[in-house]
Image (tube, rainbow, N blue to C red; front, side):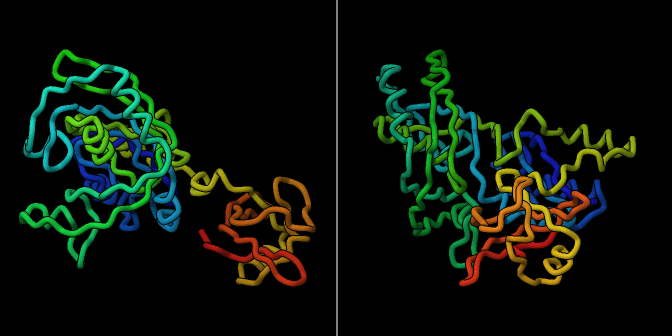
Length: 305
């Protein structure tokens, strides 16, 4: 079996737990997830199976959408409610103060990765060092918040803020909550996280682990797989005739005069960057890269599937 399964990860499992479970369920070793989701978090976790594991590196780069809740006035060593409490403070903030603070993070900013993360420093994961009581030196990384909107503010049990954020890859929502708390002067930590979207995969078409077990019993497990080309649906599709496909599959560069992009012949090669490559039978074959040469533009293999 080859393809991508859009898993609805339950809270309490690590992303690797999900991968290990699918390896056993499907009897396939080549299984990989496309971006770590915290154990306490739930939501969209695209998992690549078989030949589709070649797409992992591309899906990891995709943007994400989350719904999160943070508690203002509470800080912990993990930046979420699973950690050890470091401080408590009663926030004296208006709703407008909170809304402005959340909105202020729109755009690019330099985020310091948390100690409780899977980033490696000198060959060791940060969370392993954190458990040993070691505070490792980390470099800030540029992330981008495309949108951040407060959905609800509750004051029944402390100050809890429910918000939705659309962000670039590599953004830690736990750290975003802590950073929002810092600029408000009271601290903050994450209490809930749901990933709504990862690249082209949304929560509305995700499948639960229980459903996969049911499909296994019914013999319909393969129906849960999505074709790997969905991972690249933002790229232009191009079609090669049989002659051009044979050259392309042998690693040769094909002039764009023999390529159809979006159903039209483009002798001048207007499109640049990556494209999805299909044969005349409609089957997805590879990612192709359009390159410039002195005598025109050509299509070459970026990665076979």
